[in-house]
Figure 1: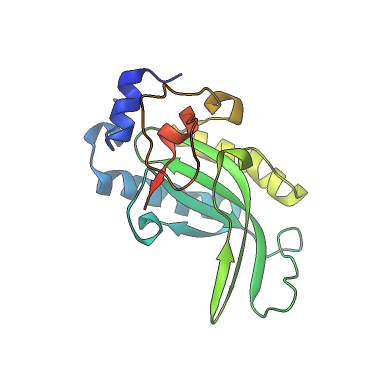
Figure 2: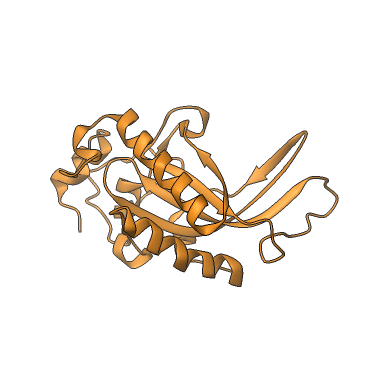
Length: 187
């Protein structure tokens, strides 16, 4: 799927798309576009979202980690021994450098004094353990494609990239795949 030139551009935090907003190579323009996408998805699907815009607080993330859930029984789960909120949700990784996204299930908990969250990895792509999240994934794909985004599935991203490429990421180790070239977090 990706050429060596595209992988080089991605790893240099440069766009591989000639379409708006990625062609501008302006992080703020891409972020503004994705803010509209996420708020539009919440309105259309009746979801709530928690979105990581700030690269997990440090370094650089080549994606926006948007997590969607509903305050219904299909999403809520009991979190033993803790007070607060605990939900299954749909994680959408929105590539900052191209019009691509992947879907996976992730759990989040939060309370006054902290919380916990999933870590997005290649192994989790397209894995939906609860019917509510699986249904939301189908609806979400339709909404995101309506914005011109393209869903990539696990098999699309499994190809190993040339070992000459060093991917600075906290999400995986060698051998790197095309997933690592598109969706990496450098802390």
